[in-house]
Image (cartoon, rainbow, N blue to C red):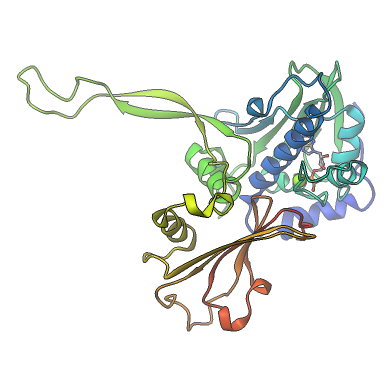
Length: 348
Ligand code: ADP
Ligand code: MG
């Protein structure tokens, strides 16, 4: 089958993308998950006015599956899916954002917010994958299509079998090379950690089947009733990796001081409780939720060159920047915290 070339500038952009824009390779997962979440938002939005959408809010999910044997990592969603034309248009042209088109075409009246506004996120998959396959069936379509690419050389599109509406992005994870341990992206623990770090607040469940191990009941004693090391068995559990509700969006009165303190310590690496917690919501042309902490001690590296001021920046619950310096004046450089915006244009 003839290979199609990416549109003009796309090749160079893809090279740039793979090699420089993002310093942390792990963020590819955030990008794929936010695309999945956007796609679900779109179908959910549609369900509000279209009775032929049978799914209810609780039926939507994103699922991760890693298979070490064949080095694949799959991110699956039951969102709106893509037609053949959409696969071409959305994945064949870098920096062409379908989400932006959707936002412009629909008066969404604040019912749905779409994270991605610049068409580059998807390509971050090539930072960790030697091949990316996208299998998709659009809502309302009878047939499904498969898009496949190994990077800058181009891509192929062909028909495929897919029962359900939605999209499956399958990465063949690169072999380790030198310092780069791509293997980690096939590891359940690591994947769960990345989801916690960047996508905890995605409002649909991000699920993964996990192998776990437990002591077999009654095997911790020998025949004479003396305690011994128990026998273990492995079992599989379907786990939801994200908590779905950001603490800063919960009702202030219902969040306990300990919860704020725990969140502060987890997120900002302090071992003492904060001296003050400030939570605020600003509504207007833009909606911002802010959660700020005044540390009770001087940060250990405060007087060193390494200390960087800044707040975490979220867009609709997805972490997009670890330290946004512009959000803090110098005289508040000791403040920790985050700002979440509902309608922020993503800027890399
Ligand atoms: P952005 O999300 O900023 O628009 P991306 O490069 O991340 O840019 O994705 C490009 C486009 O591909 C999206 O706008 C969307 O139209 C389409 N797309 C990507 N992933 C999915 C998915 N899982 N389901 C449906 N459409 C998708
Ligand atoms: Mg995106």
